[in-house]
Length: 384
Image 1 (cartoon, rainbow, N blue to C red):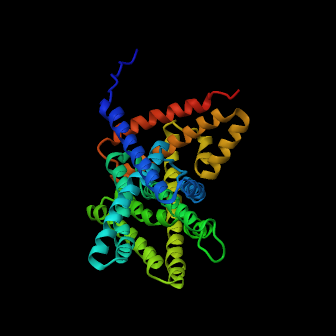
Image 2: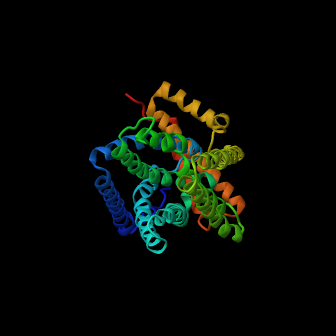
Image 3: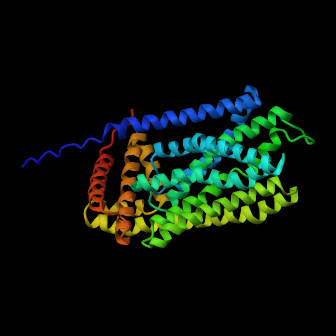
């Protein structure tokens, strides 16, 4: 008997076309404004040098974040949007507020004090708020794309990477405009690159990751108090680390800066890596726990469970399929693996009572996606 047709529900055009278009225009406008301001301050050649130099550290940060985000990769469009938000909207917001704070500080405390107020007070408070606003927005309006701490760290890291990219363009460009490439006696672009691109490429991502961790903890707990206090605590931790870093660079000596770097920032960074590593292993256990149930329902082949249980096994499986059947077949297998992970995470949320009122509908959609991905895996298009 034929199945009744389910009418397709179209999303309002203002959500699918108008709002994304407005968002892209805002991002582009902010980016062009920042580019124009920076070029006017340092010159075109220095700006180009700054762009080239800034590409190196941002590449390492993005690669690290993508490595973290391997169990359940976030949609590429959202990661690009996060990067664009940090590079344009958050950056221009910070520029306007910090310049205002600097002018007010100079007026109230005397010339030269405004820069300190901007660096130690204004920048930590408002830069972290501008960056964290994107992560909070993902959690509030795209809740199904936000599963916990790892997602929070990844989104926060991409926003901060975009922000640092724009900031580095200006700092590297200014260093080149004032001192050129530099030498042992002058702080040129090479010195600036060593300080910002080699020693501290993860500073902004580290600060904003505190907000991501706080929001990630909030979405994985039934406690109302934790849902409120964890994001606030994450924001305060980000502000504190940012203020400490800027104060060491602005007010302290070279010895003070090195002490803060090695005694505070490096240990916090290592602790963050360990924390993220623990959560990645936790995600692996969630998937492994769900696989027998999927096998029992006939959605996953018993022979596939071992190859789905770890990232290393998944990667080896995709590589083998790519060599034998081509890249399209490997991509189809990757879709099957991702569908298994999505369903496992949803089941985990249901067990915790955190899945929301639409859990049954989402489960139905994910099961359909899993079965489709399995069919594509079993008969993928072959590369020619």
